[in-house]
Length: 203
Image (cartoon, rainbow, N blue to C red; front, side):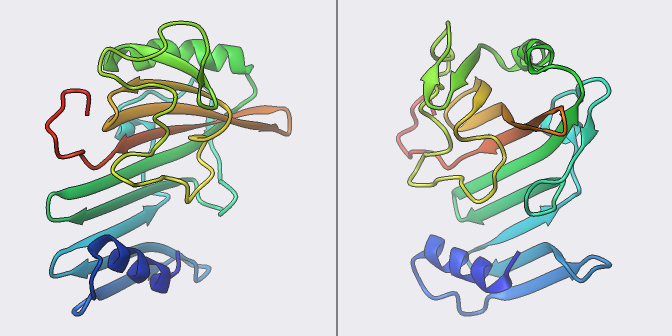
């Protein structure tokens, strides 16, 4: 994670100068930036990698699945941004199993049920019913909310088969990625997105 990019991100979110911006970076044994903290008088951005698991997202691990690295060589990511009442948090962890996608899908449809209705999406289109959760989450709600798009990492939120539960603001997602080495790859994702400010229940 590039510290300059994080400062630019903070500046964009504030739409102002980030005078007083404090940047702290922890590196791993290979010199790669693993944890980045940017703090300003108005809020901050914290990015941590390889520190969370399925349990931290409130979901079980599929039996026998192993945590795997993404294209950026991270096993998981925890991005937390807060500026006053505006908050955004994205947590994701990647797994792989030798079992079929159908078996993994059935397992997580049941597991996601603790968060209410579960919808199945192929890209932005619903597959079967229901087409939206009772809290208003639909297949078109793929991280776009309050002019925020979660598209920094390939964590299965976009494009492929997805299982979703929750509301537009608080989502739990299981996103399937292209198979690799004969294994089913999937990402568990928890999104806490900024509110619309209108106090709508569907947020």
